[in-house]
Length: 197
Ligand SMILES: C[S@@+](CC[C@H](N)C(=O)[O-])C[C@H]1O[C@@H](n2cnc3c(N)ncnc32)[C@H](O)[C@@H]1O
Image 1 (cartoon, helix red, strand yellow):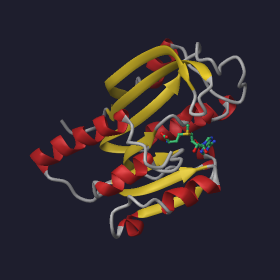
Image 2 (cartoon, rainbow, N blue to C red; image 1 turned 135 degrees about the horizontal axis):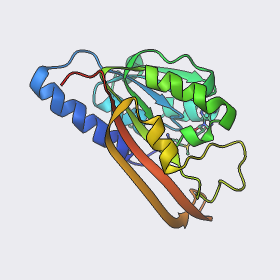
Image 3 (spheres, helix red, strand yellow; image 1 turned 90 degrees about the vertical axis):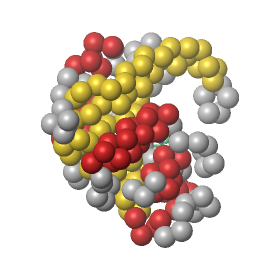
Image 4 (cartoon, rainbow, N blue to C red; image 1 turned 180 degrees about the horizontal axis):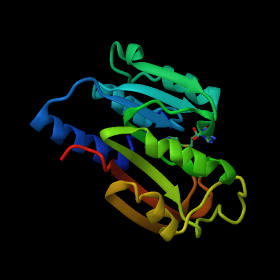
């Protein structure tokens, strides 16, 4: 995945933060990137000056993230990494919790606790960005250790937030490995309702 561009949901959230900073200024900005993989989103956060805690369950993903040639000079000092299941982490307060195409890999029984922690993490004015998978996703019938949601369930999960973007997308496509797959994805950007403004 190294070299792939950052996800649109991350870019949308970052553009919002940048627009707000133009009006009110900004101090240090800290993000958690859950299921960061090889770091396409983490790298963008670092390029934009954020401090990042990047978490992935696979050691190899974190090794590849740290070895990326496109990290800006000095970025490693703003990058903390953790090899750990995301559902086992007590998330620190952060301005952004980003989880691109990662949350569905949380086992169903652990998801409520993970979401509770995610909902509690964004600071006032902070955001959550990323994806959840819908119940008609092609993996829903073959991957019992993954988590899928109905639209009504997604709306319930987002109740504590101000929803800035919720796009339900459904289409036949392919996996990263090129295998045919039906995708049912909710793209989400949500702001802490305790946020300023
Ligand atoms: C589809 S990749 C997405 C990677 C990256 N966020 C992106 O947008 O390309 C899912 C990532 O989640 C990680 N992952 C899967 N289950 C996990 C878990 N329970 N805890 C932490 N990471 C997990 C995988 O190792 C993988 O790197």
